[in-house]
Length: 401
Image (tube, rainbow, N blue to C red; front, side, top):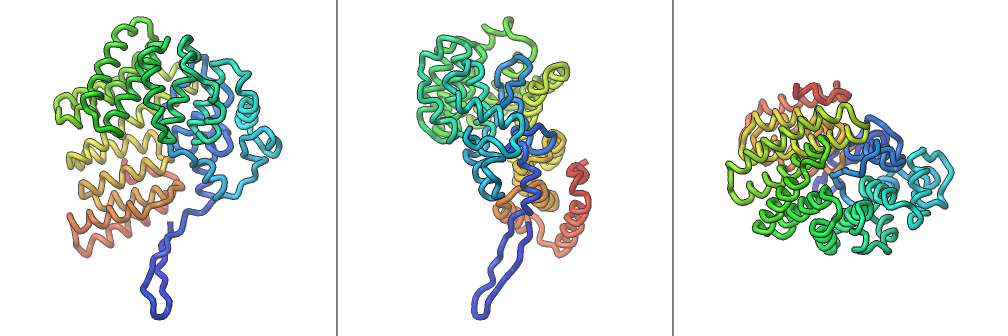
């Protein structure tokens, strides 16, 4: 992102911040827009082509990260892309639609006639690509009766995720129904995790959050012997992350440390198991590791642990260097620890991979500089570091290895 200082006669200077070139933005978000499989772009959106075609290796949707609703539609408008190429309505068929996009268009048009497992995949895909506005009209006939079957419960769980992302308060009711009455223990546990996270982040109700953690572990203990190794590791890691969050908010440092260690150990076990599984399962595993690394990064930043910030920043970049959010989080927590050069580099990295809105990151760096170091040499160090990153923009790990 380029910043230019402009002024007119008799007026104060103003800074104009330009967005990254559209080619960079399109490259980063291409998988979300086109539903073509790729090894580029944020990790969580690389699930979308497989969800669109139902190529999950025989398993059910287990994607986790939800990006801001409407992001894809906003990108399509900003990049001025043709509806025939990227639109989701069946009437827009044609153009250069990918296999995944063509399949998703057809199944959106015929949603009521799809099997319940396929409906869950379609809704999970729409959640993945931030198209909740398309999903809402599709689920008008979904009721609590869906809880009577495992596939129906999966549909209802994805409906809960749709509502959660658009800040509809009915999301709580949906997840509560899944957690209490779902036919599938995996969904009951997942529902508890969602409820616990909502209790912490939206309601500040730590007693309820603690109860959801305990209920999730109880459900897990009952179901453990019936789960395969992949689901055992994934669910343990997810519940442990919630337990760590609740422990942190309640001031239980020992409990937080133990839960974070368990979340990491099970994430590593999940990585090992996923190597022999489907491409979708490998992406779910990588997404889980990304979230675990992010939680460790935030804990290190909150504790002022600069070496921990560098360690977990390195891990996050090894897992997902193409997500602007990865670089943004590194900026925030590096600046918090006084790692001003690294924070500035991460802000530039966010721009290089197609991120926008770096002004807030720049403000955090400036505040950190005032707090930790006001030396004139810092400007030269930053300039040299940023120049080096620009020269090796295709290898974002270079500065952190």
